[in-house]
Figure 1: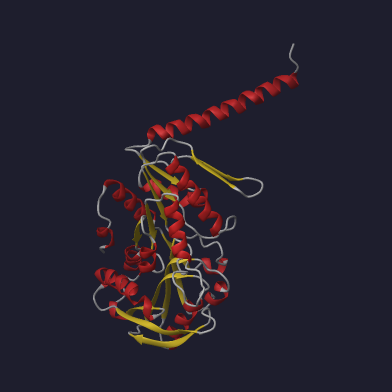
Figure 2: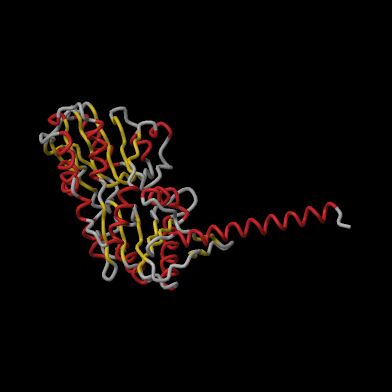
Length: 365
């Protein structure tokens, strides 16, 4: 005779065993459903972005397991066979509410190493936002060139290729790698499509693209060329004559615009971090008589005093992509922030990388 308590315990054990079997069955099915020797993983901190990429590829993410031990040491492994597969690992490397950029970078490196040890034929890291990209050279003696060190670490664990989106200094990024191939995607077409819709009724001579400094003119001109194909050939271009304090690079100054000023000014950059440059540029546009000012950047980090600096009535809209979740942005600023999706662009890069097609045509607008 079995009493009720013992019966409940047996039922609970059976339910737990059944749940475990269902999870293992799902993992096996995911492995069987993987087509053509391709695996696409997304580390947990980039799961939402990874699922959007997987949907664009019409497939499911491959399962993996990751957690921290009590002492914050990492555990990470793939839950499916990767032998002789081309493996893509999606990991956007920025600090969020739960993990630092260094935690995420370590997790990516260890996972890539585990995949190579498991006989993956190729491992391609997909980093929509690539960390430490501004630490790309020595400004002062004895400074760390961290972009180079990260490249060496990723190569050491066996990374075959890395794909990024609008990395801060393209030349430094490309030169940092020796054995790992690097590709950099651009968001200019996604932004051009967005503004082609938003400003369709505006005459192009009333629009000008502003680079926050002279060094960003090439990036702005590429975007301008893409936008002119949608709106017309009379869009202007200019740059802010900005300078840095010799003793403190975070201190910037500049209120002179060199080039074309129009009623609608689009300030175009690769990232907004503490927003010091963005504020300088927006204030300069206002002083020159601009009527509508847009801030556009691929990566919205919004660190430090960004909320305070961007809380300006003359900023019409802030337009960013989904490479970094704008979790630091205030609710007030979120109401005038637009997020342009990039997952389909990354998905197409994954498809072309595996099939051997050229990525260069993706940059044509």
